[in-house]
Structure formats: structure tokens, C-alpha cells
Length: 273
Image 1: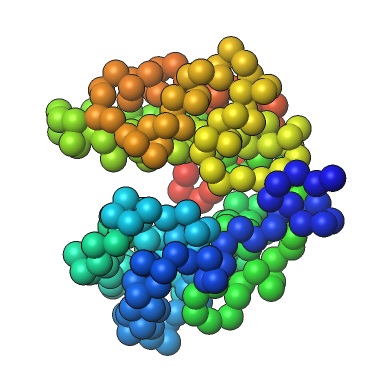
Image 2: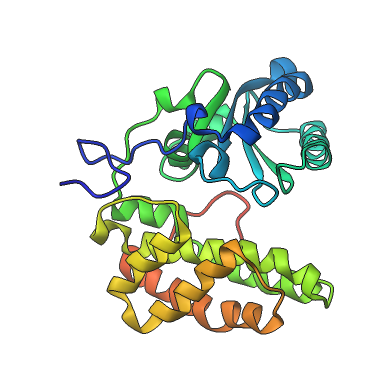
């Protein structure tokens, strides 16, 4: 019997669908479909939803609207400005969502050998087609194996110095720290889950389930990671939490990840690890 998140042949099943979008979010999705086409026009190859809205687990007033937009060419400054304007408009006009984010990529980047088991996997398995030709048709199917683990989250050691910089630069207030706690909590839980994903042999995007799966293999860190999963959904603004992420859990997780799966293939322009 296959684990959750896999199809009958043991490949990771695409997790979202437009049919799963909760009713309160359907007007938002319909409006965004039109606006994305207006903003990017012929430069756009395709657009996708990802996250809780296409998974059907979004909460009114609490969930983001997450978009991935694949362009025919590499994104320009004008494209990025258009994406920021779109994000701002969605956040201001629709009370159903707690803001929005638009990730810009190129078709060539998504289908490249370097990104096949990271961005390519993300599009094929975690993104729901909204407009245009589905790039998943040009990508393989994916198993929850060590290669996928390494190429999705095997760069935490490179990420931690940038996190320390962001924490140091943040305003000294709970309000300013709360988004950092949310973002870093989610990344740490997902990294912890993919550390053990090949042994568990399944897929989930639920942070609590991810933490429970991890706990079965690393019981000494179980309580800690379950608390991190809670903050991924209900973040605090505690400075001590952020310090624990970059001084304790993060370094331990990066080292264990490298020991088990190795490190992610370097990307152009990436700092030396």
C-alpha cells in the first residue's frame, strides 16, 4: 500500500486542483487569472497557483494567494515590477487573502537539467495550472527519493547566513519579526520532512504531518519541530525563536542533511558553500 501523496505507481501525485479551491477564494482566483494575462501578455508562457488555496485548505483572511508565472524569456525588471503591483493589488482588494506572492521564472529555467529536481518538481507536483500550456507535460514523474531530497532542500547551510542578516536587519518589534518566524518555520519543517521523506516514502504539504513524520526518525528533536510547525501557521514575534533557528535547529539540520543526502548542486551566482 502506497503512502499518502503518491499515485498507484509510487510517484508523487500533483497535490492541487482548481476544483479544490474553496468557494470564498473563487472570485479571487478568477480575478487573478484575468490580471496576470493583462500584466504579462505575450511574455507569459503559463501561470500556476500553489499553496493552500489550490489544495483546498485555505483559511479566509489568513491564507496567501501564491502564484508562479513562467515567462518565455528571463524575467526583467519591468516583469518584477508588474509582479509586485499585482501582489499589492490582490492584498488590498480581496479581504479573503492575507496578501499574495508571485514567483517569476522562465520556461527554459524550469525545464533545465539543473532545475529538474527542484523548480521542475515544484511545478509538476505542487503547482496547479491556471493559464497556458502546462510545463509538467515536459517533465518526468518524481519519486520521494534521496535525489529529490538533496535538490529541493540540500542548501540550508547556504541559506542560514542570509537568515542571520535578515534577522539582524529587521526592526526590533514582534510585528516585524512575525513574518520571519512564519517563513523560517515553514522552511525548517519542510527541510526536516524531506530529510526523512525517502525512508517514509510519501509526500505531504501539511506542516503538522511533516513534523510527525520527522519525529518518528528523530525523537530527540520531535518536540522542538512540532513547535516549529505550530509557528509556521501561527507565528509569534519572539526574537529568541529566531535565534534558536539560526544557532541550533538550522545548523544541526543542515549538517544532518548533508550527511544523509549530500548538498544541492550549486546554482549560478550562488555564494560558495
